[in-house]
Image (cartoon, each protein chain N blue to C red):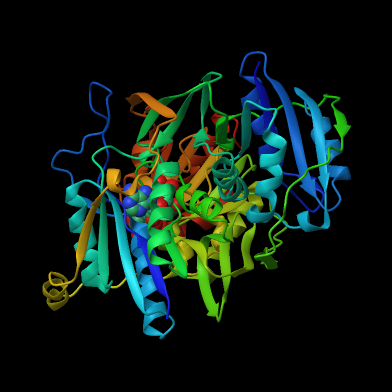
Length: 249
Length: 312
Ligand SMILES: Cc1cc2nc3c(=O)[nH]c(=O)nc-3n(C[C@H](O)[C@H](O)[C@H](O)COP(=O)(O)OP(=O)(O)OC[C@H]3O[C@@H](n4cnc5c(N)ncnc54)[C@H](O)[C@@H]3O)c2cc1C
Ligand SMILES: Nc1ncnc2c1ncn2[C@@H]1O[C@H](COP(=O)(O)O)[C@@H](O)[C@H]1O
């Protein structure tokens, strides 16, 4: 039976109010809570449901990042993944390089489905899955809100600007998740204990031999321009007056 | 010399306004030559609309029955084939462009710059990260093709009045059959389009039901506004997914945005930070939405909305 590969990116938790460092070299990450990218949690949940339906045999979670990304992989194992691979890299990879890493792992593991998030909530790139599908020369179904497997095919409903779109793709393929695909399960304490015994392999980026050359350089980080302080009105009449004054109604 | 190829987005024979924003973005690069490519089964009407945009030199029509629906896997090899003679390839940062452009980039063996919000030079741009909590200035190496998506809300549409030539180049690309279009369900609302409307009324979790959400539609109709929603309202089924505003929904820049019963989570605010005037109606005076609101009113939406509608 088939394997599913799931990407778990370690990112600043979505509840953290991210602040730019005063010297503009990045954002403050010291002492900040790190988590699995929310879209990746949804990807893993979907993989687990597919396996629970008997449509997959093994789920492998993958993170490309620093040694600390083991925490996120352990959480993934506690949610129910079978094994984990950490591709250790101390510098951040551009999405094209991340896609090349996934392609290497695909060559080794031959998964039927690669489930990634639609975007990392740190860089907001929204690229890796599409790039991987191109390099792999396989279909992509991005922004998925529903996945139905049918033998060697999948029917995927996608959240698009106009509403919902359904496409049919041949497997193997890359699927990227949108928010409404599912609601990820909570991890239970006994599962955390069990997860400690599950295999977690570490490979170095160099071992994989991927091209990690960069095309982009971030010159500086700035906080967004602040909005002007607004006014509070006390009732509807004042609200309408304020709107009229601005010429808005 | 900078030559920009822009991939047009369209549906139902209409050019999507995001394309004119991409043209405006490209036109900010000094001495850029701008061409627009239209992929369709029948590209005639859309090509004409693209040719009428100021700043466009040529419109390239690529007509093929396989291009009837915008499938990234089918379009990407064709865009890549056309991209040869260009230094830059741009698409809109809509679900169409987000799906397609990274696939094009990877076929060309290059990376992508997502969500351009400002142009500093041909290879230097600004873009938001961390849901807009930081703006970064990024420089790309000049010896690689630059594939990018353009954040439509950051640019004024290129004006009409252009007169580009329309050509039909032949495109040699093998098209995959592993991806097939099945269906699309778009609610035809008769209301203004959320992404381009000058006024938007949005509702949040506080509405409590799809039935109550009609209060939002009703106020919107009175104002001739489009309707938006928070993620919580969409998740709860009060409003359809295409109305979601925010980091993972639509990024909009209306003249007037009225947020009703929306707390103002970071992920929501990133979608409205370019709105000219933000009005917030919320019963909690401490709600973060008031930190960005130009006009705030603390109170119960169920009494305020009917009053407001009557007063307008
Ligand atoms: C990865 C990720 C991506 C996300 N992307 C988005 C996105 O794109 N867009 C988005 O919106 N969210 C997004 N979210 C969710 C976001 O974090 C918030 O959960 C969501 O925006 C909350 O919606 P809300 O303001 O409607 O609900 P709540 O936060 O529950 O706020 C409801 C508000 O209504 C007020 N209220 C209640 N009753 C009344 C009343 N009778 N009258 C007046 N006011 C009342 C309350 O005071 C409260 O402030 C994302 C989250 C994650 C993790
Ligand atoms: N370093 C990484 N480790 C694991 N998964 C990743 C990594 N980078 C990207 N991905 C996957 O690709 C998706 C899209 O990321 P991005 O293109 O950076 O927005 C993420 O949601 C992950 O599933």
